[in-house]
Amino acid sequence: MNRDDLVRLRRDLHRHAEPGFCEIRTAWRVETELAGLPLTLRTGAGAMDLRDVSGYPDAAERAAWAERAVAAGTPADRAAFFRDHGTALVAEITGDRPGPVWGLRCDVDALGVTESTAAHHAPQREGFRSTTGQMHACGHDAHTAIGVGLLHRLADRDFPGTLRLVFQPAEEGVRGARPMVAAGVVAGVERMLAVHVGLDLPVGTVVGGATGALATTKFAVEFTGEAAHAAAAPERGRNALAAAASATLTLLGLPRHSAGETRVNVGTLHAGGGANIVPASARLTFEVRGSTDRAHEDLRDMALRAVRGAAATYGVEVAVEVTGAAAGTVPDDAVIDLVELAVKDVPETAGHALEFRRTHTMSGSDDATLFMRHVQDAGGTAAYVLVGGGNPGPHHHAEFDVDEDCLVVAVDVLERLVRRG
Image (cartoon, rainbow, N blue to C red; front, side, top):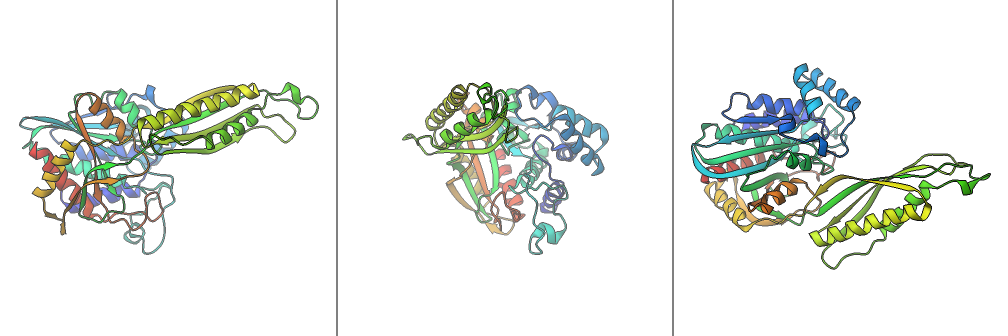
């Protein structure tokens, strides 16, 4: 795939952005772009275990996005398949001689951001602004195009070993990796990579291994009490809202940790009832993050004790659901060294002289780390590769975009990395 092909695909995906687990047209486009290549493609249960999904969209939401996908050209039978069996795909291509098994994660989902209509915003100016109410405000359209482009480049099979390309839904909210790990998609992978464009780095910059991403767990908590008349019989009620409010204040006041940086956020609190009714239900969502496993795990345990303690204080029932999770980033020097060698082999591409940096701090969280950690725990190595995107707006912003030269940079470097073995 050349630059024009990569740009064409990226812009098509950008125009039809879809949210996590509803990337139905996106999955079909990937499937279509890979048709005829000498690879195996796993979808459905072979790519994602739906039994291990949290916060999965309900049938009505998936049906609505399937209808939208059909209206945008997706065949009805393929839209129905991805609606019912999940939007994850795993493509595997094997070279013509022995070598390592590489894994590469490319995420495919968009964000609930309304894209800018400003005249200077390239997608608006060039006619590929999103039409769906969602937006690729984090570069996942670019990641998907990079993954597809890399598989096309390697279709001659003139390389050692195997490349397994993981097209992951629902990275936002860190929900999609866990069910793919549960489906065994990185079993046997020896060198695991993720790729991300942007990060306020100039085009031509390649980072061998991102560091600093925070381990995180995200929760949804349901408090269930008992309604009562707030004046006539308040003692007969059990106040779910009071329990949730107490939990909120305790969560936000949890102590920091000497083992690393920590973060706590309560995102939503909803409760039912009226001014004269003791509320019988409340729903709370929150997250904890830590820069080390110990800091994250200790904070997570404290948070759960706070939630359950608040429920006990007010005599209400509580149900806790994990809605997302990610590990921290711990890149292996051996993989960073290989990325450096690949960059040296491609000193200039797309009109840019390449600059290699060993590491770069990436704040936030990304569940690609679950793939990486799974491979590392099995004795393999991993790294999170960053490719400068020259983005004019910050990530998750209505004016986020990338310089499309970064597509070529990423594919050229990754291709060289795999061909080196």
